[in-house]
Length: 357
Image (tube, rainbow, N blue to C red; front, top):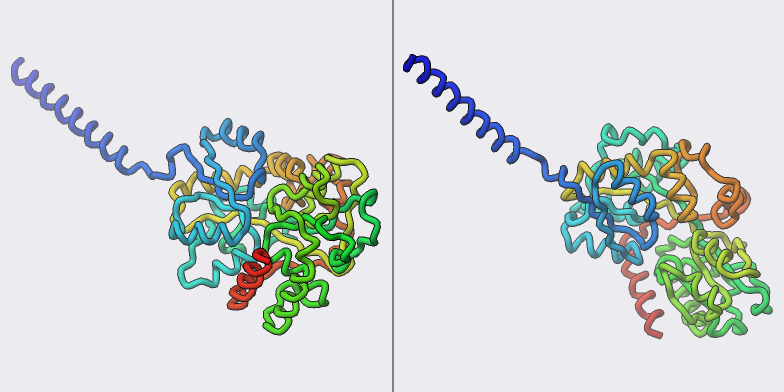
């Protein structure tokens, strides 16, 4: 009897020790990415609150927002964090190209096998020049820059970027607080590409900006439409979503597709190379490519949807929004912002001097 009890005790001891070891091993091997947190870095108001609430409801993952105003600001912060701190960043096409060309690539290569809904993407937005084969990026939205003005206050023709230099528009413009946007306008006025790298042509653009400065009253990357709505300005250059908000906020405002051609930008999800919650990042990107969720996001932010799965959910109001869907003839005149390589230093200098004038 004692021998049997000893055996039972020995067996129980072994089981307890084994269970303890297993539990300890399980705890220590649990990947950090399983923590119910996602650090998202993007522009303000770019992912609607109800979409975030739905994501948390479905996954239990809490989203922490950090916002930037320009792609250049984002890159500076990401470099300071050495490719860590954030899990998902939503940024523009050209900055992805710039980052992919750096010696120390701060983006994680996308494992598409972890994004089931990748199949929902419209092929129109895949395999672009800034990221062939979508090695680092997953499309989110596309938008175009346009002019919005108040015809009851503006008594000069507004058909192109060139018209914004009219001296009668002194102290009446709101421009995006974005170097590539504003310098691009000056280059367009001169008949050049927004991606010009020739120093002589860039110097000409610099001279044009000096002439434009007296007309500029406000720089605002996030809410340029507000100054049009409240009457502080009468003409503005902004993204389509902001133009749509302007028209909804004040009756009588009109949209102009500049005859010298618009700038378009495709914004994408990327993952920093040291994303602390990479598994959650994949879950978030996959969630955002769900047709219904994708439609919720773009109908509220009023950008072009990049998935085919969202089409059956799109409202007539969204499909008829001329700030979102640009006529084919106008789209043929558009130009994507691209990485300008070493010329970016010239752009930075031009922008700095322009803002200080």
